[in-house]
Length: 132
Image 1 (cartoon, one colour):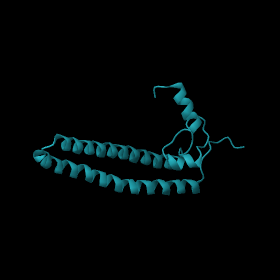
Image 2 (image 1 turned 90 degrees about the vertical axis):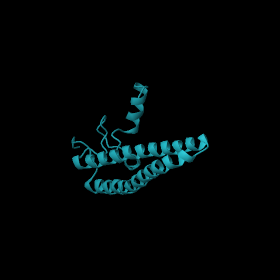
Image 3 (image 1 turned 60 degrees about the horizontal axis):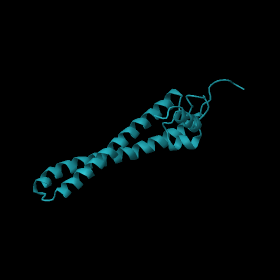
Image 4 (image 1 turned 30 degrees about the vertical axis):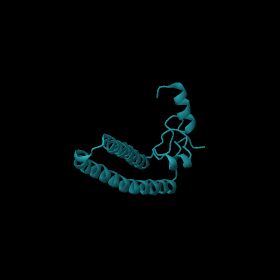
């Protein structure tokens, strides 16, 4: 048995790349619409709150805006992690557990393309550092 680091085949990596690219494309659309929501919420809000008699309405508006903002941040982080996953495909570290050097199962890589550890190592890590 060859002791070289385990890797996914070129064919598999091409498949992952396509999968991640598709996620990125739909995410880019989501980001655009989230950004649109944030901008429209902000511009329409200032106008309406001036006339808003009910503080509750203003509260709801700001709550909606906050939710939109959190969603946007989550999407942006996810976007960054997908880009990182594509970089890992390029440099050959995609799907390889940083702890054991074993391959991370395909299902996990499809679910969490930016994963760098096998589930069991991630779990063990949680047990060892409860604060993380």
